[in-house]
Image (cartoon, rainbow, N blue to C red):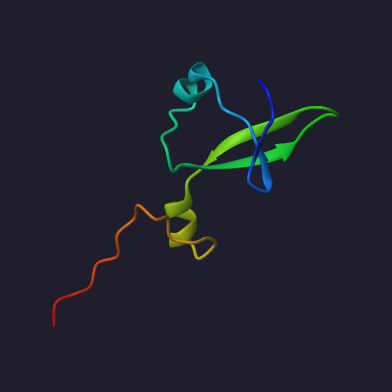
Length: 69
């Protein structure tokens, strides 16, 4: 993979095999942590579950519903 410049950030494209293995879709959130020197780990974050526990923000694709008065 090649690191590319996207605006003020750097980015990588995930290979199709990785996307399929992790069951990723556009808009999913990932957590990236450093592992050993020169390595990192990627895990899929379940943002809606964190929101319900008061630890995150509501994802854009989630819908809030109001009770009818």
